[in-house]
Image (cartoon, rainbow, N blue to C red; front, side, top):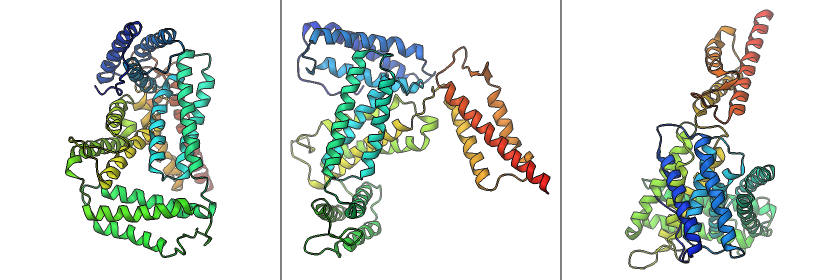
Length: 441
């Protein structure tokens, strides 16, 4: 399996028993992840979670103040915590502290890449900030519920993400409000160029259209400055002008290569394209096909490629660096992969995968009822019969108000029952409106 990056520091004798136990736990978690014949239950995960927390406790006691030492124990521990985090999401316990660990890893990578790329929307940071705020609330809520050793680790990682996010905001601080629309337009164009560059078929017309947009922006330049949307030459030239030049250079490189990567890096490129395509398919079908633990493999594949860089660049088998086109192309695909994983993580519902088929049916029903209402409702209560039948069939699956799978009562009962009640309310409102309309006639 793809494991966390290996560390060069040796494992002391006192830590070897801890390493052995963590490897054993990781193997059990990996087997559970691979078994698609049944859904994961809380009773499968919680004992393994307790085992990992105990090893964290022992590791802290062994290391004392030297807790920042990084060796293979930390590598395997990170794998365990990542898997446990995703398993907590798979069993519907998204709003508990252990489920946060994987998100902190993903946000750290995203922030690293945003800082390196030096172009992004302010709203990109707003989304990350909102996610971190929600994670903080979850940590505070679980202060007495989970191991302080685990909470300390997650708190440290959240603080690291918050520090990186502040640095990203500071970078944009010189961008005055009149210049924000121009900056965002250039960010949009640069991302569009990067996306065109990785299409399976190179399309010159699309590239020409983007170049024309850039030349239109450049045509308003005076004395090396760009005006903002309101025509003012406001603060932020130090960001906007270099980004325009970067867009023009990149579009020229893409045109010269016609969307083809340097053959030396074709293998890495193909791996990243495969990762991106798979994750994009998951974003379209995630409600029906995603088991959160599947994301572990894709994140690790990205980590391996990302960590293979030296001084920010990629090197071929003979140690020669990639040219600027190859570097930007590969980095775009890595960033796209991390962004897709982030999207899938925040879209994860706090419902056990055992209840997801029911939950997804109710989501579909709600969407249908919303569309019916948008289009003026129904003219006759009988038109609601198919929806009522489906709601009743789902309702009849409950035993004493709870959905059971075999003898188990999976997590997420509240979310499913709330959605069921919402669908009932919408159907009732539509029926009432139809009856009132009939009475008026």
